[in-house]
Length: 402
Image 1 (tube, rainbow, N blue to C red):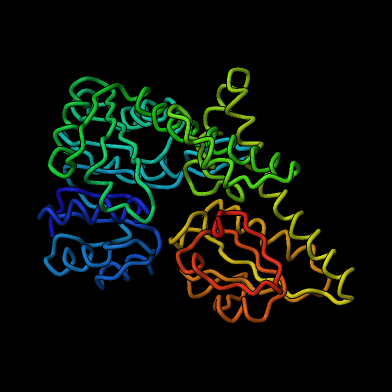
Image 2 (image 1 turned 135 degrees about the horizontal axis):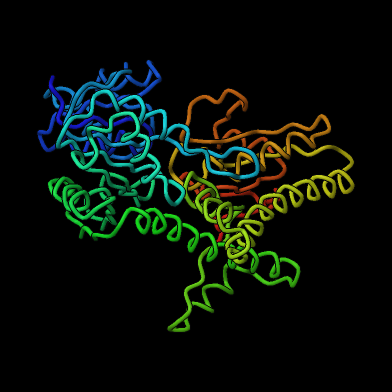
């Protein structure tokens, strides 16, 4: 296969993006450093949980439009869709973006289009532009470089990749228009032109805004707990106001977007991002608070009944109905609860994954039937209509019983 598009990174965004493009009869080579991921995709299967994705991947592989490899080859379009984790004190690490870029620099030729989709600190696209031109000065002005962040919801990725608007910013006007022309073949949503720095900031601002709104709801849940008020009922009533739209509280904020992106702003602009930084602190504290509530409930049980309770922790993913555990507050809470365990029995439940290297997973029906304390950490669909005996203690941190 001679690919038109090479996608570097086959994770939760890279694989769906590759599959979408390939489903339009465009030859795509997906590149990943994990040989097992490569093998899985080449078998027409997937390594993540995402509705509709496996069917699209299977068809694209069967038709010969999608192939995976550990090594990039020459193409016309290169998409960088790799992680941007932290280093040090929540400082963004763009080393994966840099490594992916270095890997394709020898392949670039006149007229090629290079696009970063990875969430990145402001100025990353320009840094990669400089890196490319320092290695290949003859390419200056001869290739197109742009930034286009994804803005999809896990669990609905394939629909949103097509329907959602996209913000596209090039290092120059020609690059912006070249990238818009590329995405227009696959995206039905409106394509909004800007520059690379604004596009980078737009992604960070979108998720920082969400984080701040969730922080308000989580802070409200702390207040309501102390005031003996049902926070779920309160929010429903407050939202009857035509200009109020309070979000739902949870046990924190997870995922590789909302829980991460605000730090990219705070790291570069600490003096100016007071509210953004405080929102992060509130949402991180909510997870700690939930772990403390569970611990206190266990102690109360032991004092009342003279024995240690059996506790079921329901959910590990960062949001309902997915298998993604990145930055998951539920996973953090489970870890804290087990660390504070004094030879107590616990059941860990996550219906969207079969195996975890740290936690022994149990079927939710078995866990509930054998436990004294039931803790809802994630509102998975399996948990929504459970019949919990009144004899059991139930802690609902995600609105399952609202």
